[in-house]
Length: 227
Image (cartoon, rainbow, N blue to C red; front, side, top):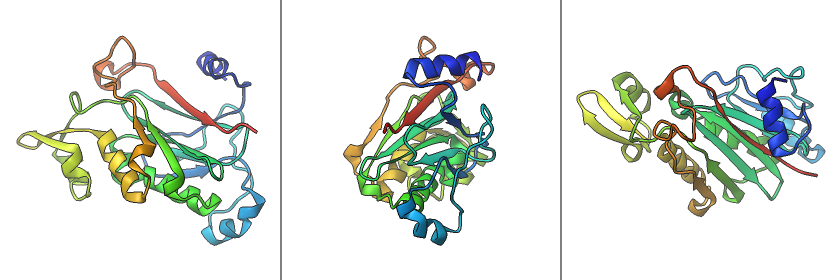
């Protein structure tokens, strides 16, 4: 475990080694971390995605995914971002949790809906019982995208709400607005979605930003269930 990950573990008050991380490849892959509850064994079989324990060697991220879900108390799911949106989801009724890394590619591919769908098939989670927090990310004020990005997204129902034209072939894009709309369309109540309002690119005093600095660190967002 790196020095910074030890600092993160210390700040959260957890022992080293319980942080589970995703490789973060800007896709829509979701991994189940830890053990699936026995009561959900039939759902596991029906999902066709397997069960058991899905944990990489200590200190290694789970490859090929941008979202993690678990119902295993004691595990902490960690996502790192420096402009992309970190999304943390809690299903308090089951209970179960998810941590999602959502850049523009992941948002276009539906990584957040994919995470909630994995929670549904693995744990029986209902969107209406979920709460979600969208962490600091680059805001519409600083995030201008071009036509190739728009082509990947403009067919989505949320595009008119999240994108503002700024000139020929250019748009300012608010990823958190897009993800909030995805959550609401899944059935998550509006008052269950919290958006941390800061723009990472604007607030050099608080946040790392890849778009602003290029060579930069990452912020960590993590969530865990306690026994």
